Image (cartoon, rainbow, N blue to C red; front, side):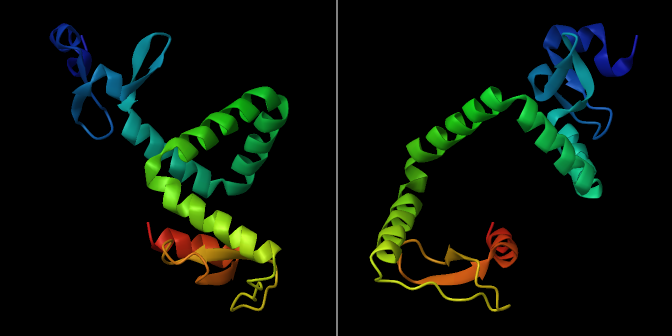
Length: 151
């Protein structure tokens, strides 16, 4: 029998990942046909992320097609994710800052600027959510880059 999934390991409810060679609980593996896969969840996510980056155009097409053919399921997933984000107290300061800025924009208290690249289609980037009107106006590309720097 395969030493990575021996009877002894199954009795202990553990398995060894064939990618990272780490022994983990069976719950740390995705299941296929009711049996744990050979790579752990962490290694599977890393592999999927690499594939998505290397096949960005194909991944975008596949994602768009899935969303189109699973509209109700996608809508429900979005609803759950939004509710989870809103219900998390760690996000309340962010939500309040965004709400205040939206109000100020609507009532002319704040005027949108340009991105440093000159693009006028901009989004607000908060360095400090405790100062909701102190924002940097960035285009989608630069906002994504800037936000990923801070994670």
